[in-house]
Length: 551
Image 1 (cartoon, rainbow, N blue to C red):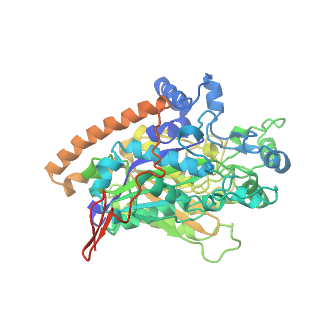
Image 2: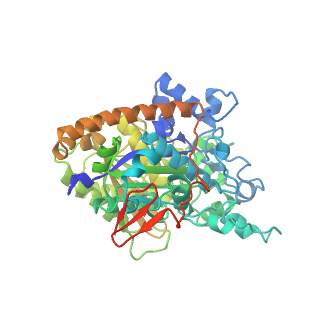
Image 3: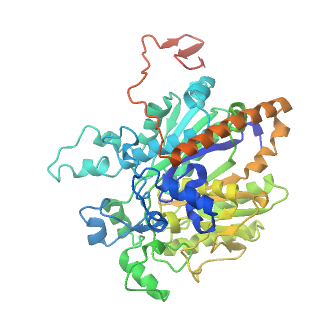
């Protein structure tokens, strides 16, 4: 690896999906709930109920998470559930109400989830952005890359804009702006960070999270930025998106689920929504899910400077398109290239190759199970990756579109902490057309020695031929590099700061369990005045409260 000081590292993650909050590994722990201690189970239940005044039983709380039957709040007219016949979805936990955590009037759900997710990531960092980090940074050395794959499609965004005249209503002045896919990044800059740095949204269908991650890591490796917020938030469970997937025959509707259950000799009188999505099994289609996932990415050098925890390294994100395609939604050749490059890079970086694991795209469709398993098997066989562990998350979380890669990353970080790989528990057995050579599919939760787990390969395949594979290296591997890069004095200082920041992180987690989130949302506050807050010369630009920008 070149210039290890500029190695991109993840220092924090935040957000929420149908499993719960990202920080504190709460959402991850929900995935492996049956494998948890009683203490950890109690923590998960308490967090899921932290924003509710109700008292519910363990069974009721768990039933209000992950994939389940869609309630009428998402489909009051019945277009999705009655007419189209799709009732399975992975919405946010029923008792986790985020609407009133800040002044969110007229904000689409994806924007609300963005504000929550970025705040969760910043607080989980344990270091005050405004007072401790921002003063250290040239504004040009901060970046935000964030946004959904499809857009803000509910009634506060594009959905409301397109339907207003048909419903004899007037479009509001916010409908158009709120529907823009880069609005997530704009909100982060304007209302949370107050950043005047680099910004954008790199949409790549279901690989969008990794496209945004790649944009940030490339700038870090080229020494153009030190600190980035990246991620995606999507709320796609609505009639229009559902109808679009229904037209492709790729979504699990009620009739298909019943037929699948019949093929497996299961009950056929009712739909088992919790097992509607079965990655790599005899399945019937994808299930849509809601998610917001955001990561703080810095250079290793800057992480040590500010005393940030190192959760993993991201040495590379490999992105390749499919070339000539049979159809825009069909799989192609690009994913073989991304996965082969990720495997090759890993083998060059690790002389004593140990355990590795792929968190697969695993949508639960007919095409995905055979094509993605072939990608993994062919690349593993060609590059002598033996007994490569494979799992997937969409049987729990559904397909969350843009943030799907973030769901994978947050799970990988949870496994690095707790050593349990969530298995393909909704899949009774692998389908006959799944390729298994050199692969070890995790059909149940599996314990793994964290010290022996070198890396994850996070895989995403998107409509149009958007393929991305992110390599994620064990934080212990990164920390072992520190003595080779930094002086003893620098490491001692880093460890002292790390301890303080860890206490801050634990205090934040305790507040979350009590429902005290105190979201940072700085609308119309502390505006910079061009008359008095900016100074421009031939050699520099000086902004109030920022370091100089050298010209």
